Amino acid sequence: MHDMGDVDEFAYAGYGEAGVGPLRLAFFSTYHGLDSLYRQSYSELQTSLPMETPVGLFVLGTAYGLSMEWLPGDEKWARHRYKGGVLFLWRDFAVGGTVYGFTDGMDGYVDGRGGVHWEPQGSFSFFLEADRSSVWLGNGIRFRYAGLDFRYGFPDFSVSLLLCVYWEGWFAGGLAGSGGIPLMGVFSGKTFAK
Image (tube, rainbow, N blue to C red; front, side):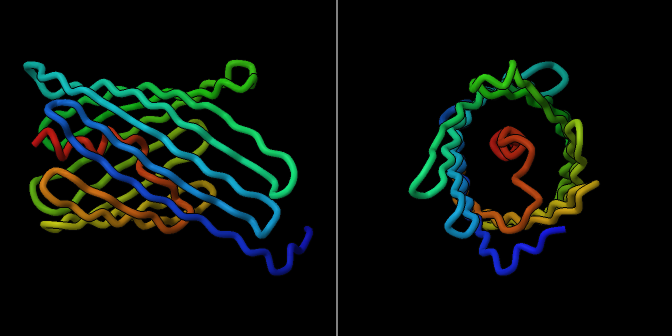
């Protein structure tokens, strides 16, 4: 085991979402640094379109992301990421998944995630999300103008806290911790379906 001593690691993230008619638009951006050795910035633009069906709401979504990484004063590189997702909303439940991949010669690297969210009438929510190597459990609490989401990841334990502020169909939020953002922005799009 190698002792890294006093390494300064930091990360910042921001997220926003708006509904325009039936169309949902969202973005998030992150910035990560490791001392003066490494920097990464990732930004993503998402959109989704809901369709009413006799048994519930069906949502199709897509996203484009740009990852820029660099070693200060040395190498830099960029990666493009594409996503597609589906979501089905029925009563208080949301079931969905996403597939995503990068375009940078990783031999057609494609992966995916899925999840189930339960938001009973009231202020609480619960969810389970997974990909091929990790599982996340979480819960949230909603107030009139704000909300808190807690995420717990396994088998490599991680925890994060997401704080969102709501106002007339708009909301913005910030994240602290290593548990990551919610699976896919379309889950939060349920607020526009109500």
